Length: 537
Image 1 (cartoon, rainbow, N blue to C red):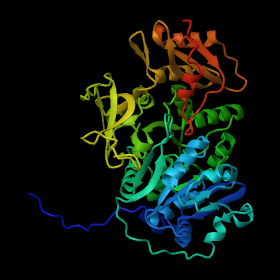
Image 2 (cartoon, rainbow, N blue to C red):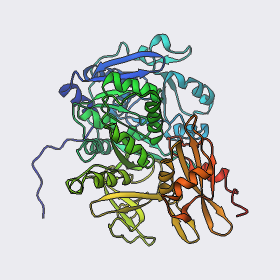
Image 3 (cartoon, helix red, strand yellow):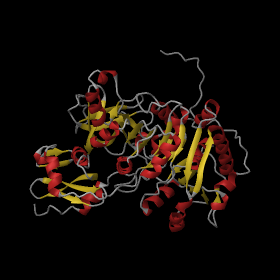
Image 4 (cartoon, one colour):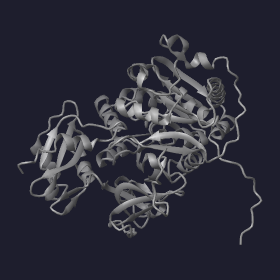
């Protein structure tokens, strides 16, 4: 028998995050690059006022509880404001991905049934191309100054200019929808994941903890993960709760532009996919520039090449991996140290941090299972299907009838992983990417990481293709750094000292590595393009 507690019952609401920051960290800055505009700079108080203006504007357009609003925008202060204004009035913000193929982009906006579409100025050509296909969109608003708004479009600044700077924010059910994020749709149409106020706030509180991003009010955070990609890993919320200074890079993610912001704005923390940091390190090497105030970066989307981690470490920048997915909001695990690791010495600690995706976080459970769904031991060696569950893990896809989980709430991530005794998880491959050669398994991730360490390699991608004798064999596609000279013999000699002989790729190709809309290596394209390359053995 239980008895009721005597504490207040108040729902978790996203608007309370920015309300708190405006009260507790009123003068902390938000700095933003925008499309073809001067650098924007304001504080949490003014941001909260503009969030209220935006809310009034949306209500005036007829948007209310449960309505969907789509954004097609970069990492800017105006997009940041939408992250609070839209869910604050009880509506749902769908962060559309401009890098999706046209058909998939149209599908997500129509599937969301968004009535308002807010876009950055350089997204106008996309909208012009697709406007006739966007079923229920009633209003298209350009996130720009009045004098930079293209003719024929409504401008955000003009629309919010005369609105009040306060808003009577409604009390919402914490389980109501807040953000609609779509998977990249590598097979079939993209799938929608509808985050709730409760899941976003809990995720934000957990992401800021010492075992994850470890934020404090002294941090200066530059999100290089896109705001349209799983809410930029939750950084707009985890950072705001802790009163960090935000530096938003807009649409300029090239190394020189990022380095300028790091130096000028005192950035201490950033996060993004490996390709961003590959370009950044190349820029640092070519210009002999230092990392400035940068102290920590978190890398997700793909495994961190060891040589990248070593290079950053020599510059005094700590590298940590993150694993997650749209279906986990996206924080799953983060590779942060523990006292038990520290006792093993710095070299052993770094080896664990750099070769594991991360360790268990409070609020999300992880386990591995065999083909029959039976739990496997957490010994760091046994691999199995990675399953997750928790308050910010998907239960069902948006507008889908069937649940996405099993009867006990476990969601199959599609990854193959090991978990060790200290709770560190290591992805060995995606189920669809693991290579079965002659009845034995080859990890495409491990082979990629080895190849990425070869001097001159910018990006390395491994995929399994059909082989008439061995069923599947690996091929390696390498995108070299500009000016680098690489040969197949040179790469094979480098790999031979680092992987078992039968793992060596049957063919090494040189050229651009295709990426998905979220910046990950698109192995589906590689497999399709080169599916017959080993046809004759």
